Image (cartoon, rainbow, N blue to C red; front, top):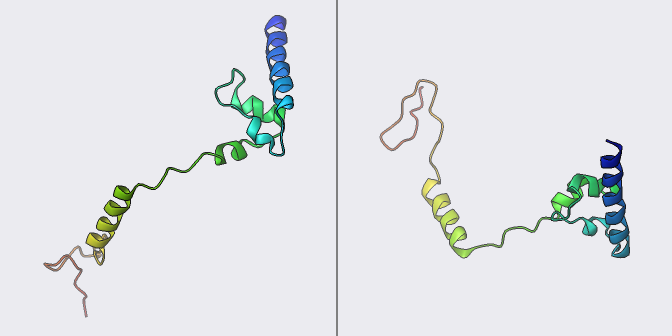
Length: 100
């Protein structure tokens, strides 16, 4: 048990030494998900919030085909009610009847 704790601390110390050498203005940049030290532990050692690390994920590039599909779906569903009225009656065009 003691040897495993010593080994764990040695790995963390080695990671800290390596990271401090490449430290910059943004400490979150030293976090490496592929490293042997867990991301959670890297964040603790570097004094960085995990949310900061996960928020740095790059957004998916915009695909023109996805935009076209989104626009077509928006146009085809414009004006359609997706909820049924309380009594469940709908007109032939899919719109609800209004009771007077």
